[in-house]
Length: 543
Ligand code: VG1
Ligand code: CO
Image (cartoon, rainbow, N blue to C red; front, side, top):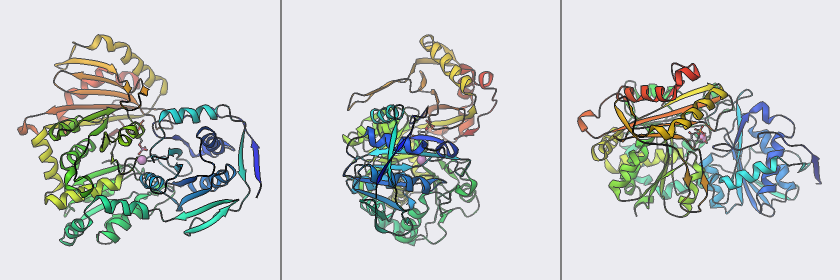
């Protein structure tokens, strides 16, 4: 079949954010929009010709259309072989696993993660190079630059590939292998965790509930939790991926994972509850009537890592994104390993993982992972927790209380103000930035500011830098308030305010989080003038 060259002109704003290019589906449906970005990947990242590409997505609306287009473009750009998940599905960690396991040049992952799907929802695309991780900024900058000068893209004319059957076919002279999306991933999980111990735990009557939220982790969870670990049918709920996620918001938090929350806080609750997001890289962990904050989850895994076979030799270090709570810093200190602090977004962990400096990583936004792949990994976290419960005989709550007893409790909350006027949000941040030089030494709600800055990062491995990554106000007693604007939204701006304080007194470890932080929440509002500037009295989402 012949390669066709199509003339095109650049689109404004094809700039990847915290995690890939995310826009409304209707934006992607414009003629040439997807094609321009995909061609920019092939143009900006050398080595695709003759190589293997991994392709798949979270199954949201437009996934299948985009995959057929990308297959034809990959063929025209000389890719030798594409591995595509059956039905076009690959979770983000699943894709990262396949890229690494099969020695691919890279992968294209179609997802807008936890954002809503459907014809009026969001779509997204991101490129992961051969280490399986999100492209670092030097690559996303090159792709973005290319989108600004593009004049043509290439594709072959070929019939659609049947994505529903595993097997090999051709698009032009390129081989297309439709693969089982779960196989490589499940095999990797079996090397990391003690499946026999978890099977025994479940055989002994331990019950769990996993909410796949009608998103991509459904098939992964059915295979691993039910088929391989022997959890009874019905353990996985909302396990069939739907193009609109059943109309829900595939975001694993206390607000959106309501089916799961109802079970874990209801009568006869199972011992562990978990949910993951649209593309399967986030996780929420619940014990019986007990919520584990993502920051505490990372710290608990750090303290107990050696209980899991894949980490029995010990961990080299840990890393957290800047707004993630300092609980893991305390756990790392207890374990005698270094703790790195990076900007928000998994792409900043890549060099630390590649260099063997960090073994576990995490973000407050329900992201946890390790050096087993180069993305955060929702189901991996669930298996890790199951392994800990099996190995220690302790409940989820007990494991977290043990963290608090040993390291102190860090009360932590994030308040999101979604859909705020972009100008107002940017003004708020600029005004805060302008105040930073004068804040140190001032007192707010009885607390003295030790230091205030706009977080800037120099990567300890490759020396790359990132500036303006969030305003942080550190108080002398260890409390902290952080402000930043989201880089994943598609409408208006989202202001995120992260609020925490450590509490070392064990007698005070049983407070309600919002109450324990009430004073600091007021200070956070006053310092930034949130109510006055956004017109919002209440956050949209509290996690
Ligand atoms: C959010 C989270 C960030 C996470 C990113 C991608 O980014 O805060 O921690 O890495 O989403 O996760 P932002 O810029 O909106 O705060 V996912 O699961 O959406 O790929
Ligand atoms: Co995600």
